[in-house]
Image (cartoon, rainbow, N blue to C red; front, top):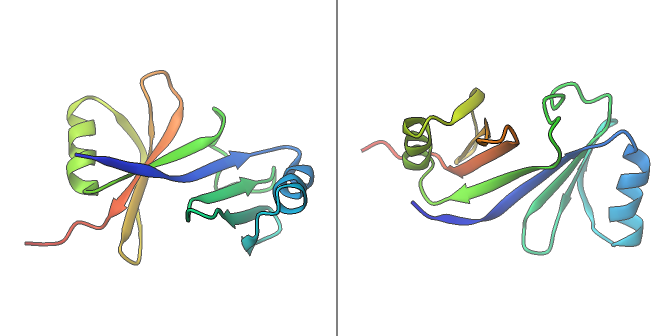
Length: 122
């Protein structure tokens, strides 16, 4: 199993507008997608940075600080190894197009995410 890169960083903030302005106006990061309570930025290396305001209920569990997603070469193998090691996952595996991801608790309780290609059936 190989962790290839950090693929995603999600930040839940009570200072939503100010935080959006920091990345958009001060650092010059372009907005890729926007709703009333969430803004997605795409960094130059294709890392996704998402900011969530207090009204974004779907990401209410992002309560331990920034959530970082680790991209792996094989999602199924990495997840299986983590389950066997006693790592506790949150909710169900999510899949869009050919990418799967799932949030999990690290040993210290920090919420993180595993992301990788959808397993190909033999």
